Image 1: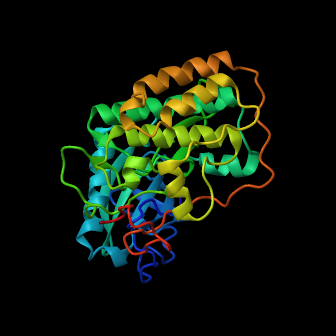
Image 2 (image 1 turned 60 degrees about the vertical axis):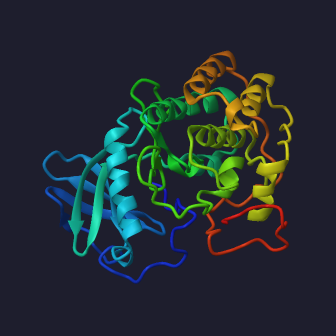
Length: 333
C-alpha cells in the first residue's frame, strides 16, 4: 500500500502517537485478523501487513490515526473509502474485506498486494518499455471506466496508488490494482472537501481541478495521461516548485520526450488536452492502450532523463498560497 498521503487537505503534521503507531505486532484485531508488521505510514493512517487467521490469507490492514478520529470529515472519508471499494468491485481495484474498530480508532482490512507500487518500479528500473506501460495502464483505465460508470471519480491517480500484483496469466509480468480512494468523489453524493480547495497531487492534477472545478471523470483521464508520460519517459510533464507545476498544467503544452513513438505520444496528447470535453473517456483510453501494448511489443524503453525529479508529494494549498500569485488566477477562493 502507498505510504504517502493522498489528499491535499490532509493534516500536514503527524497526529499524536496512539495505538496505530504502537508496536501492535501479533495483535488480533477485528474478527480474525492478526497484525504482522507495518508496511507504510501516511498522514491519515498506518498500513499493516496481516493474516486472516481462519484462512491464512495475507491482508492489508489500514488503521486511521487516532488523532483524526475526532475529525468528522476524516472519519467520513475513511468510511466512504470502504463504501466506494465495495461498490467498485473490479479485478484491477484493490479489494476490501471488512471494517472494524481497533482501540479508539477504525481499521479497514483489504487485499494485500505484495509487489510494491509503480512508483517503486520507476525508481528502481527507470522508464518502462512502451508496450509494458500501455499494458499496465490499460488495466488502470479499465478500472477507472467501471468507477466512472458508477459515478465515482478517483481524484488521485498516480504511480504511488497503482500497485503491482503477480499474475498467474502473464508469467513474470505483473498485473495492477488501483488503490487509495481516500479522496475519491461520488458524483451524486455529499462532498467531503471544502468547496474550491485544491485537492490532489500537483504533478497529476487536471487544469479544471486546479481552477476549482467540480470533480469529474475527465480529470482522472488527464492524470492517467500524466502517468503514461511518466512511465515511458521517467519524468512528469512539468517540474519545479508546486506553483510552477500547476501553472504548467494550466498554460503550457508538454514537451514530447525524445524517442517516444508517435502512437504513444498521440495517446498522451489526447489525455492531456486542456479541455476536458475533448479528452476520451476511460473506456476509450483502455482500448487505445490495449492496441498500443500489442503494436509496440519489442520496442525498447526511452532512455531515462539525466536527472529525475524527487517523487511528487501532495501539498495543502488550502493553507499555503503561492508567492507572487497572479491576481487573475483564482486559487481556493
